[in-house]
Amino acid sequence: MKLIATPQSMTFEAALPLQSGASIRGYSLSYETYGTLNADKSNAVLICHALNASHHVAGVYADQPENRGWWDNMIGPGKSVDTDKFFVIGVNNLGSCFGSTGPMHPHPDTGRVYGADFPVVTVEDWVNAQARLLDALGIEQLAAVMGGSLGGMQALSWTLQYPDRVKHAVVVASAPNLNAENIAFNEVARRAIVTDPDFHDGHFYQHGVVPKRGLRIARMIGHITYLSDDVMNEKFGRQLREAVTHNATGYKYSTQEVEFQIESYLRYQGDKFSEYFDANTYLLITRALDYFDPARAYGGDLSAAFSRARCKFLLVSFTTDWRFSPARSREMVKALLDNRRDVSYAEINAPHGHDAFLLDDARYLKVVRSYFDNMADDLREGGAA
Image (cartoon, rainbow, N blue to C red; front, side, top):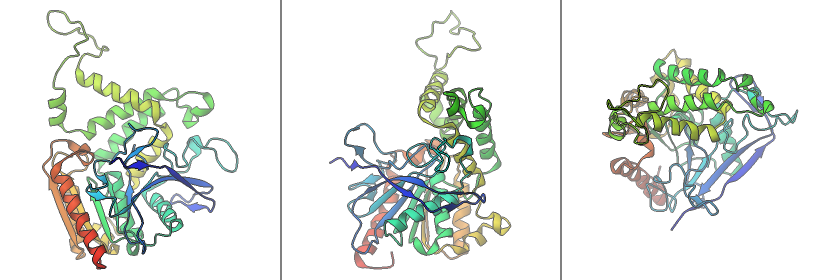
């Protein structure tokens, strides 16, 4: 039976203080819920999304049967995160372009589109906004908070900002901060956007244009980092496009034509992305990635940073993920063990690179299923889940 999703929205008039010193009021958060909240509201699971995802976590819309949630293979009736047992909440972050208030929306005071004037937001700001939503839903404590990549950073931050409101944290393909290489990739992508002539200092809405060229390049750069070398070689190798007419050598010897399959694939991904993603949102979210570093306030001591955490943890990494490598997950495992936290860790030998956290790997899905099944058993028994 298909899980039918229903998008919802909640508006918050009270100002939300942001880490930058700014604040935002009159903002809305888009969200979806799946399953049923039990009588004592103890079975709620919050799902945090990564860069270009949204609140549409699972299922399909009644009028859009092809629009499947981005983690639908993980979440739903009888799946690893079983919505017959858990009440799952997907929230779209502030600054996104998928429903929650972001740069595309009007400022409540001026009525003009925010554009580049939308305040800078951080992972910690998103968590605070999510906490307000849970307050409004009457949920005082989460059975679990879960996310992959940037979503995993939010899950980590939940355990530090609201340690008494989380019983379990499931952190997949993530890291306690970005290394210099990752920040560099983000900066190159941002430069591609802001140097597009159609960017207009972030106020392109007023000019009736979109910096599609910059968005295309940003997406191409990002997509390369999400895949492993093995997957790219297996899918594309050095294959030439069949539609290209070649001379006897097999090449057209052009510096600008799209000749190789990998070039065609990247351009397709870039073109598609530029049609639906907002340029200012891309800048905001990648900068939030860069800023996240809970150990900074502790002189870089991650163990000291994690001393606030109280919940149980499941961490998952993938061997070919070079953007958020297993070594980064092991750093977190060590820091948590230094604090005598209850930690489970799975390192999955998967060929897919960073995107593995979204894909169907039987071992990965089984690890998560087992963890949530044990959590459900504890909830039924009334134990300390």
